[in-house]
Image 1 (tube, rainbow, N blue to C red):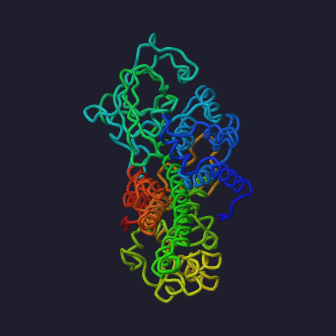
Image 2 (tube, helix red, strand yellow):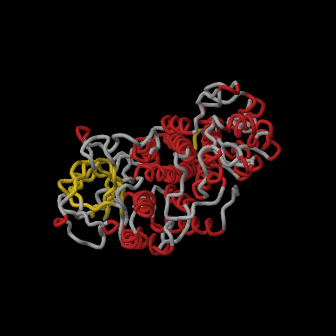
Image 3 (cartoon, rainbow, N blue to C red):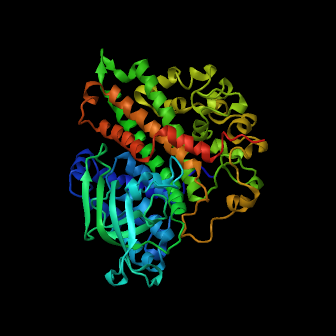
Length: 557
């Protein structure tokens, strides 16, 4: 892979950062979350008209920019830096790709241009379990029967009111559908103009699940904004009382498969968003410890403060590497568990020579193992001493330089100067091979695994080799992911959420008395970390399911 960004990607990030810096400060953010919509409507209009943010990953024929999921993730990183409240996640990341993947030609032509223009916001009204982030999304996650949830039944053809927005799918002679039930914790559910509601169509818990289009002003729909832990991520409860709806796409479509593939992209976007938030809260903390004085000197000059900030920085950079790789892999439709053997790539999806370009080993994959595979004699808490350098917690011999900070690096933890960042993050050029990259022999053992182990890691079977290592699918309107969930995004999300939680927690501690004030901005970042874990899965379950998908602990004979 190419670890660098293109000029276009850098321009997207720069332009978005400049606009948000002017329009989304602390006061503007707090004012926006208190509005009925839960976000700044004028800012969303500006993001739509000036940057085309809602249609960033939509094809140009539908009014989109035509970028990949990589650009979508990089935009999320900038939005995450300032915790910008917007319909971006619900509309551009969750709803639009589903319409693109499952919708009929008529539905795409009617809905996607409006979404790309920013005139229509949409959201997915389904439990987060439908994205298969922490477990298989088959089963009764959407409710049904005694389990509750949302039920769908056919309505007589005469009762189906015509309308271009919810045009009948595929020209079917059947009537519409009627939905009844309740669902909670719907992102932007109180304000979205269009709802993609997941409902069971058979009247019992394990019947077929389909997606239905429901306008925000539909008769019988009751929307109540809920009090959320993270006020920058508005949630709502939806009650559907015999609400008229239209099926998204054709009957018989692989809805659960599309939702699971959407989970790959959503995990990557959320990971980059969390990395942006962690980066910003670390910046705020460094600025504070450089100014706050105690005993006649800045508290950032104290060794204990330096070490804590250095640990946060190392964890952040590990999360950034994992998130960027997930963004690259998602954008290039990388395969589960690794790339094709024909290209000589390792089980993590990178060629051996690419590991140093990424900025370090695949920390996220090691996290899933719990440290490393038992077959390599490594402990459950981490890698063996010989491999610790790769994880970002250097071996004892290097701790003075990378983890504990040498004298030259100590200036950085109080100030984080350019020269010190290299030492804090992982290390001077002379130590990069040992602390950041692993030698070729270690790389094969720890990150790539030998050919004999690839089957255990979930490398593709010969029948899938062409899809794994070959070009992208011919139809860009599909979600473009493999048939099974890709563990890369889930591992990146786990790493990023953990980094954000750590960075925000340290920020509260190091800000002292003012940091413990509930109204301080650092609490918003802490709530974002906690809220995302509650919504999209605890870190340990993200890692456990990624390990299961990659078959890391599967015993083979």
